Image (tube, rainbow, N blue to C red; front, side):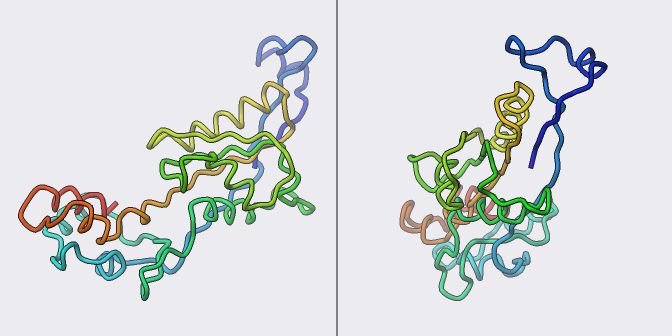
Length: 211
């Protein structure tokens, strides 16, 4: 949660001239942070029990990739028993927002600007941010979706900061979320690309499914 206050004359001088005519620039603060991780953590040994083995063959590059990335556990939005998805990307983001508590009386409907960043939206349209707004049941407010692989959440964060700094809103929520597990299941690779036991796709899929 990011909010703002009117700056003192000293801070105004440090920040430069007022923006937008009579508007004073704001001092912007981060008031709270929250997160949501779906389901129980999955260890390195259990990855293929959840995602499945591609064409029934264990990954030949798994050990190399895990040794280099140092990851010990990850969370998948997948039911380990059925393989069914348990959350959408928008649901993951909304759950994180619901866990914010920047002040005692805070409820999501007090959000003036919702900034959402992702590389893996559930749909091409409507935008991911609007999907999160719908999951939260928010009234009309400013909504932005940031995309850009590794920078999507930072794009959203920067927009939240600049929006408050310019005096357009008094608060903003920035949320970054990813649902990579939705395209990491073994069936996706097997049915879309055919057998991979012999070559380079095994190395590619092995890398992608360990991060």
